[in-house]
Structures are given as C-alpha cells and as structure tokens.
Image 1 (cartoon, helix red, strand yellow):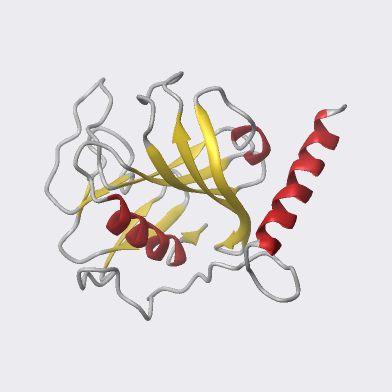
Image 2 (tube, helix red, strand yellow):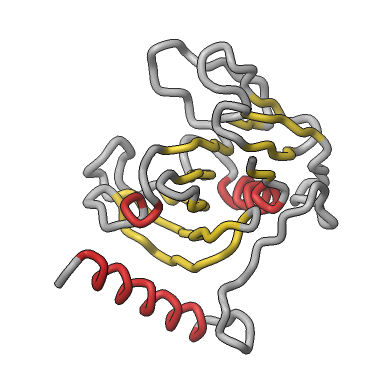
Length: 193
C-alpha cells in the first residue's frame, strides 16, 4: 500500500475515533482558536500576560506572568518556558522544562508517522493559528532519547513542509497536568508569521 494511502487511512481512522469520543455534532475537527489574549486562566491563576517572539521560527506566543523563557543566547528565543528561572547549557540537551516550542524541518505527515520511540495514546485534528494541526498524547517506549513511560502532550502544526512542535512532558518532577493546561492555552495565543 502506498504511503499516501496509509496516511489517508490513518487520517480516516483518527476522524472516526475523534467523532466517537466526542467533538462537534457535524463530525468536523475541533478548532483551537487563536487570539492575542485568552478568556480563561491556567490553573493556579497564572494569566498569559507575557508575550515573546521567535523571529527565526516565525511565531509569537503568550505565556504565564511570572514564568520564564530563554533569551536566545544558546538557542532561538522563546523556545522554552518554565515557572522557575533556568539556564540552558551550551552544546548539551536542555534540562526538563515545562513547555518547549520548535520549528522542525520535517513535514507534519512524516513527523506524525509511526516511530519505535513513541506510542500514540490519542490524536485529534485541530486548527492552530489558522493552520491544520494534530493534538497528540504519546508515551515514550524507551527506544529513543526519552526513557520508557514519559507522557507527552504535543501540538504539531503544519507549516507547508515544516512543522511547529509545541510540547510538554511528564519528566522529573514537572507538573504534567498543570503544564498541559498552560500549553493548551499558550497554543491558543500562537501567532504564526
């Protein structure tokens, strides 16, 4: 079976699963609205009052007041967000942080394809900043960089041959539930250029 047919079959299966689990009555994908401000607050009362921009990756996003983001000295600005101050080591993997956003030079269909390092727990088509996207919950298998059992909530946004990836993970003492709510609200403020 061709790759295109496999992807079409997978997309159809995801739509059927999403409609069986809820969604709107017309069977259309759920939409994540993009506004400059959100009407609800993340748990803990953190308002998305701060805004930062990553000109190289072509996006701007709001994040909670009191949270911190990287300044661009080690990697592109506005790539990492965390409730506590942090430093990014040079030439090394960053420590576990609450939210990360990156632009990957990989098409959405390829990035969202099967991987021995990840087991997809749930996936649904959404819209982010007016673009098609996937909202996925995954679990690492241990066959990649992450140890087995790390849960991730990720948004994969189609950028016509590239993909914007916004993710939070259940690593090393991170509050996965709270960070997932914050990520969801941050994605709703995403401005794509």
